[in-house]
Amino acid sequence: MGTPDPEPSGEDPMEWLDKSQGRGIVPGLERMERLLAALGNTERSLRCLHVAGTNGKGSVCAFAESMLREGGYSTGLYTSPHLVRFAERIRINGQEVDALLLGEGIDRLKQATEGWPEEEMPTYFELVTALAFDLFARANLDVIVLETGLGGRLDATNTAPKLACAITPIGLDHMEWLGPTLGAIAREKAGILRPGIPAVTASQEPEALAALRESAETLGVALQGVEEPVPGKVHLGLAGTHQRENAALALALIRAGGFDLSEETVAKGLAGVSWPGRFQKLTYGGRELVIDGAHNLHAARRLVLTWREEYGDRRCTLIFGALADKDPAALLAELAPLAAEVFLVRVDSPRTAAPEALAATISGQKMAVHTVHTLSQAFGRVFGGQKIPGEAPQGPVLLAGSLFLVGEALSFISGGPSTPRMQ
Image (tube, rainbow, N blue to C red; front, side, top):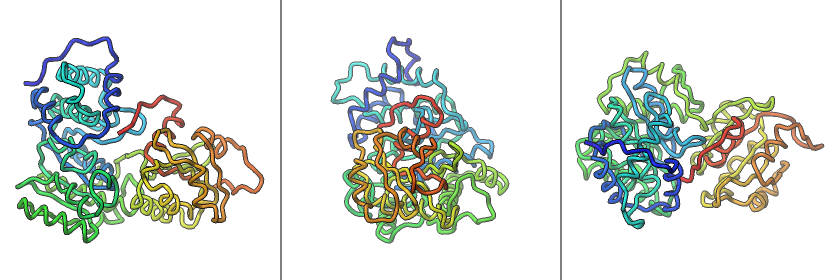
């Protein structure tokens, strides 16, 4: 049995949860396990498909959940970070969990951790993950699709019971936490594997694949490689050749988990998927706008390939902002050849890269480069008709470099507020 529903407190539940972001990232599962026990270990009733990797985790999860829901299963979907609204992280049967359930769930977290010393309190991500588990368990769902937050072995999601696991393409990211090489990072991602639980992997670099296979062999896990993308005749709700690879991995994952879906169900699920911030096409201010959260080198290269597939040699107006710890100069170098002009902006984060420093890295290229302080200023210049003589003609606009920037842009376009998205 879980903890009883607590009496509502005077403090806004989201404010209480947001305060925990100051605890940062603290590796380890001890706090998470203690928290789940305090909640009554309701997560033990869950049936989960668990996804780790560097790039494509969210898309794989979205494809898998969409196919399962199309197949008539009741589903939970847990992803991170959110772009605009916190509730994007926790979806039940395709819908963001409502504010009342969120508030009740957070109050249960408060009750479960009452009196804990600050040094023993769970981190923000641990609290959010436990919140998702609690809400999913209370909804009595058929299957949960979980996206790993960081790494795998010590990630809070790794406390969930599993039907099957998937590893998306592994690249060099979060090296300060996961290790300096592809092999080291792959071993951390392989930490989600369990003896007797089937697992599938996307195509990997040789070093990463060797580490994954070694980990799987040690555990006695039969690791299935997924090499063939979903055929071009199958319509996908997400653009790009790499999404066909993600879709194939998602299909292999749900089959490994014991779900047998018809071809018609699979096709409808793949076509109906929606995942904001992944080559998302919009019209804004009379111009085509593509928003993509590519925030590491591997993702930036895939973004370039997708742009070429969709737009050929057409050049864009690039709005770019990135975090300083994501090698922003390298990201910009990949994307800049697509652009006729570039607007460099600050990301709404203390970790933002300085636009002026980024401008110096592409100063020798033949394009107009502008530095602006805020995204709203960039939007005013790009979409507000404030054209400067000599600037490029109005072609498509590409906004990329950070999920933080994507979230800020989607909030700006919708005219609504956003909730903090530190992790």
